[in-house]
Image 1 (spheres, rainbow, N blue to C red):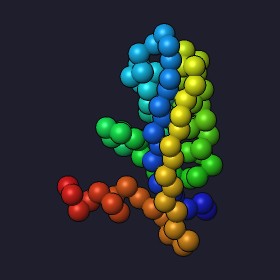
Image 2 (image 1 turned 30 degrees about the vertical axis):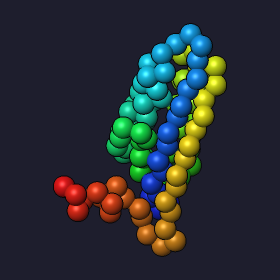
Image 3 (image 1 turned 135 degrees about the vertical axis):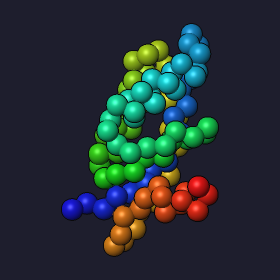
Length: 97
């Protein structure tokens, strides 16, 4: 069984024709429909799950921005991975609830 990781992603689309937030929404839609646990935040979205599955979703999220009219996308990714344990959103967030 694969361990769970947390991957935070910020996808910044650039377009001369389209409003940036409408393009970001396309990326978020891909993530929301992926079935992968996630949390949308003001500056990035954090996903929890198996590494390769998340990376596949992020590839599709970038494609969605480009297909919607972005001329290019800049992607910032942060990954938290543990040697012998899952990484969960609750590990970091429960103390603030």
